Length: 305
Image 1: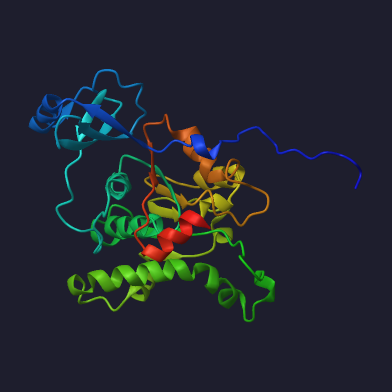
Image 2: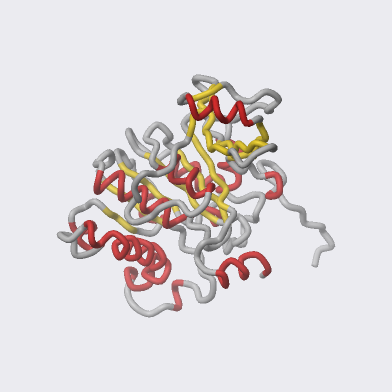
């Protein structure tokens, strides 16, 4: 109304088409793949541009069906062979190469920050929670699995919902409860003694709460999952990461194309900026999940709407 032109704040923006994927496809000779399988690791193939720490490789031979998966170890300047998973993780097995990469980095205790990006139905949240349950309830590497997400409505705001604070927040936290219940259903035969995720909550192993409640806390020895991180600003992500105490791991999941926060977009949100800022760090890893596994309808909707 004043005749002034408004422009986006450009500092810290990451164009979504250029967002780091966390993996690349590399064509090699069959002899290279044979040698790679013969040992635990190998020097990067000739001609490959600079690799980032914990970057994954899909290695293929042009003249044959030979292929392999690897992960770059920057401390050894070598590509480490990535074997198939011999057992499921809380009932979950990777259904594609990107999910294989994601589970590998989620279960690696040396990697303290993991970012998973991808459209709806690719398994971001499910994989993260399955790995978190393995590391807390089974392996006892961390004392607690803390799962949180920002409260941004797609529809009516929280103030219009009936009930007290807990009842108001339940719709936003329900997708997390759904994922945990789904995992319990898959692994129930192995966990005859457990009655459900409520028992994990009662034992203090699992904590699910809105993001507002973890601000101001120091959070040591926990596996922390922040879902829907694309709705956070870079400053909010920084606040979360600086709360991570000794022996804590932080996982950020989200879809940069599906944003409910009116103050950020696909290029300026906290998830995209974190992916780009941390891609060169040894304690961080990222995977872009590209294939929907929820259902054919969910995959089609994510692609065309």
